[in-house]
View (cartoon, chains in turn purple, orange):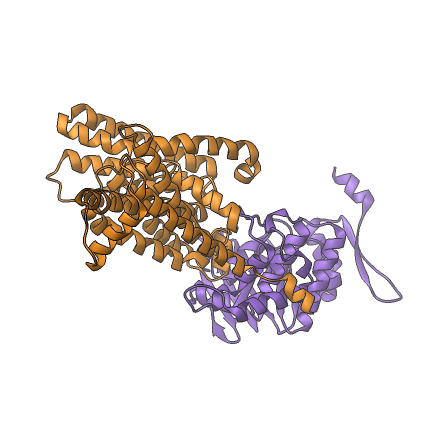
Length: 266
Length: 346
């Protein structure tokens, strides 16, 4: 589905040493939930902006279903990829149903905006995400978790094969985080491919089908979460402050902090 | 299932009904404003004059009625309507494009820029631009000036945008004051009258020049109103939904500035309409620009005709229209600031 080859990006066009992204290559298959994992400022958002065409990479290939998307205008990319930004606020009190309906924009040909079939699509996405009860509320009055669900419904209304989410759970409480993850799982079961950036190594272990771990603009490890996130990789990312703990009975892995070492740091 | 469907009704019907009712109110306002004046004219006389001039039916017993109704009041009322529409739709557009309910043509300095352009062409008639053209050019200079002055790293913070608008606005006002200082008496009179804003000199010729472009501009804005919805969610959002934001912004700003400048070039600076009306319309019909822009246009027309009727009837003489709209507009802004602070300042 999505294939990235040797992607390089930097704001300095001549000098390659300041590149923000270097030789990024990975694939995402249909129906896969792919996590991009790494500490803050490692270039996750930049990578996403390259994929959706906001930023032009210096070098590399980007294809969706073997179609090159690097030269595509934003109008075309929006039909292939839906993007859910980090925390977002609107200055105007649009109702939730109106925000969700905005997802139809890339497909609109007519003069005056959405048609009846578009409205039906929006209603259907709200039902799938389970926010029909919020439909008539102003988007500006919602909590962070609810807003994220609305943006997810909007991305679903966009009817793309690939969805990209930039830290969808970073501002949410634990319950809402789990809710978003279970929703993403549900969407991948329907055949949607999803790329999502994650902060929390546990979330990545528990929910993602596949991960790419970034450090300083490079992929240092990728594959299934279990194989990619080894003790060695953890060490490289964070220093020696946490361990992988495996539950012997069901093989369920958890990252736990090494309390003694953490107090040493401070 | 059915219950769900009802709960997610988009409510377009009621919004369309609101638009219809407002259209009738506008029609009513137009007709009553034609009747009311220093010299009140009965409505049936108004109709017979209109029938005579439009369709050549019947004849007019009273020639004075014909002059007052056809030559003076109808063009004036029509122009008032068009200017009210232009200022409020452009206000609604600027608010959407700049993602802020507090901007208006007046605050962004467009009015002052356009006034400078028009004064320039009154002062130097040999400049090959018409008053309208010159007003438009300087209106554009102010709005793009304010926008680029306040744009820092891809963001346009509200405070800097407003400050830039105020700076450019006062710069252009100062330049107009310089003109007033060096102008001949005739020029001074022309500039001053025109700055205060008024419709007392409107005739059919103004309707034929400006009156066709303003409705066209408004129709074009309405055509982009869905995209304006997306744009008002933010640049990145709009791009992710497949909108070429830079192109759309420039197009919308040009259209809005065009109709604002045209109004300014005909009637001088009329403040507050472009801020007040879109906001009031948003309270009634919500932020969806597909309904907000037409409703703003209708309400703007009603408001300006109303103000103009007050301006020409409240005293035996004529009060400048800009004064009336400011007197009504300032308290409204105070009310907004006190009661809806959070809407504006996050």
